[in-house]
Amino acid sequence: MGLIEKIDDLGKPAWIALMVLSFILFWPIGIALLVYLKWSGRMFCSRRYGHWDMPDRQQAREEWREHRRQAREEWRSWKRRHRWGRPETSGNVAFDEYREETLRRLDEEQREFRDFLDKLRAAKDRSEFDQFMADRRSRPSEPPAQPPAPQAS
Image (cartoon, rainbow, N blue to C red; front, side, top):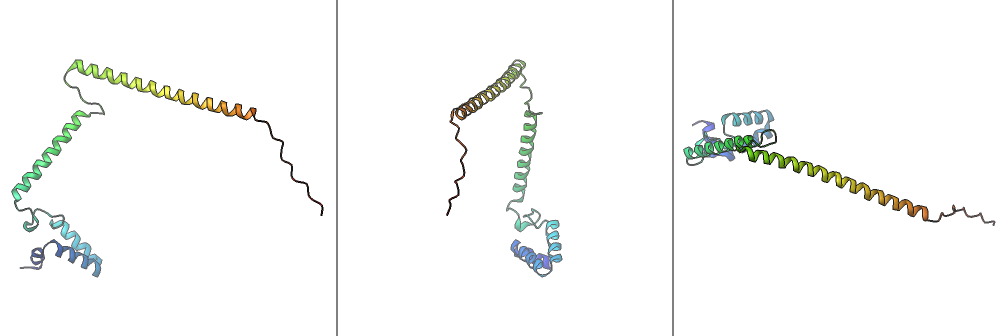
């Protein structure tokens, strides 16, 4: 039994300890060990090595394949629904026309409402500024303060 098999029997903590120790002693060896662990599949709980694998390898593979298949289907479905920011047609021409008209109308109403709010803000700002100017004009002007006269001692 070789050194690698002995470390494999000790498990993942032994590989981690060996890698940390090799970085402490001489960092190029640590990098080489890190590359070896990644290349060999011993890093990130690879499924190639039985004692790090789930008890039922076949079931784990099937679950992974099913997960990936579902993810691909969800992605394809999302792409079909969101082509260029607009969903594809529903298949019903009358509904699609109604939907497009409603979306166009809502966009127009939103634009009109923004314009209304802008005008309202401008009118409020104008009235506040006019009030400020009126208050400023009606305020009696104060004579400029004269410096105190020097006292003779």
